[in-house]
Image (tube, rainbow, N blue to C red):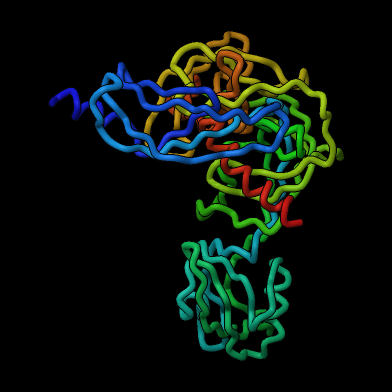
Length: 385
């Protein structure tokens, strides 16, 4: 009976396997896929069914949902790129008061606005830039406006009344607004069949509020890395780079597993590698590909120290940089290396996401499968367009 309980706890309710694959938990046989999807460059196909999990292939323990998927193949990245994101609406990053003839007044607090709120429209007119919102406030004449905002992924309407600033006789809202952001990261992979690419392994968040920047559009551009500030215990390092004139493509998703877009052009003959399923990733030796200076993308040795079975979409592994060359150049993982692909046993298994500030030789990584699943949103966009 004790063996049956242990087997039940260790087997998830849902599993993903590839064609002609099987999952074993200890000596407990789970399932086998018998689907043949054909050549690697055919669009992915996925089927789903339920199976009975048996201990020693004899005693039924539980039922589990099994997804059988054709193996995904991608071209690993490792090149640095510049990111320019434009928000869906404008984000409130600070709420201040406005000096009026009757004293300091905060229209934002009076209306119940909060930092991190996204202003989508004013009186039914969509807003995308800080200057657009300022112009609407200035021309309001002090009339109450109806703001459509988004907070915690829910939309609501709020009445907002700009006030007359005594310093310049202009109606203002006292809101500090952000409508775009920019930075440097690393391309993780791209699909040579359709040009979809992924990078970062985590979302681009607002520096002041920590909220994910809702995306209305964005650009991926080439970046030149000139060097880096080395990471030390207690201080994260950072790549030093500049945007260059070359365009990589357009961005369509900024989500918790990374940024995703479509390349302007790509080589359909570039060498692909298979994407590992979560259960195929193992502790032990691996490599990352990253760009940390003007020599371009290079392979460096790391160790996958720990793998987590939880539902966190970003912190799936703990990795440690072991390559003396990379340690000499950067001190370990630095800002700008997010998205650096991780390869193990000839497969793409993940991407670097975060550094441990107390020990920059170590950090977190995301499963590559998590990123390829998110990329399906871009595939849906391509089909719809």
